[in-house]
Image (cartoon, rainbow, N blue to C red):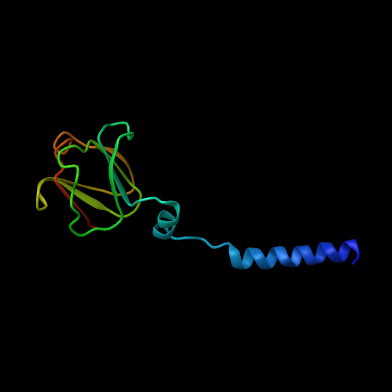
Length: 115
């Protein structure tokens, strides 16, 4: 093959590969592939001592009762409660990094995905 034929074949193969192999992922798929989670709980205010991570709402068992000081929300909206069974002081958080206010700091006993 001549050089220009090689170049044309390469260009066609590259275009076909890009059309079939590259896809934009939604947040949940990207988190699953990347090992990320929808919400992460930390034992301090500088997001270094990870206590637990969750992807689903419902009634998760909180293994770090009264220890959470900060959170990272990657997807969805989550409501955190100071007391068990979704009672007491509550705040709702969307995507972002948060240091918890005094009415939740080291007091979170239940949480649920609300959006």
